Length: 113
Length: 115
Image (cartoon, rainbow over all chains, first blue to last red; front, side):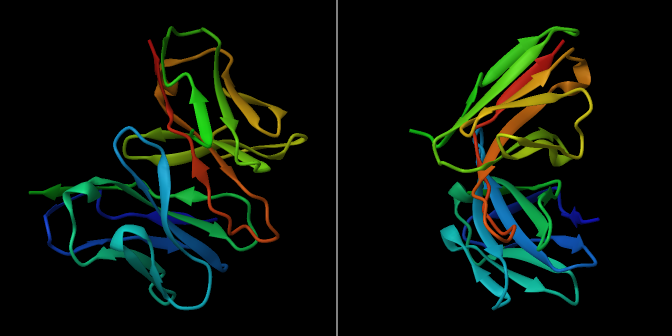
């Protein structure tokens, strides 16, 4: 079975500072990895996804994530955050032969002016 | 117009009442999902449907039922609501492909309070 761990439930960061949101997964089979963002009072939107190929994945709004198979991690990064990045971020995983997505518990990013 | 819509957006009900949450999509996707979101627990899958005749239980299906009335409509029912079903409910869709690497598209959510 898969599980997804987001170690940080809340991350405060000052505007224009870099940020890293951590995600680790456990799976004995190959997986696909996703980051979703949820802005206040909205549904989830896809930020980026890793399916295969280059381990560095670039997404929308300047975010990127790096797949590290040996560390079973898929951390999300942005070099300079904006106020508008304040949101809840979810890491998710699905198996390459499976039908279900498994979501982490979420990380609340708050950008401080 | 939104591609995935949910009605109602907010609902307050009493213990024991039957509640139906509705989801409609205009994306033409085959696959539809119902999740609930609880603080500190993230999203958990309740039911999913890969087409009108294919409905599957997810991680936490007890106390819920679903109906796939058409490709575009997927309803979630709470036959007898209880307070621990108070949560934010999301519907999602995805396009069927050979591999399960499709993106999920989420509705805006329904906030349910069971008193």
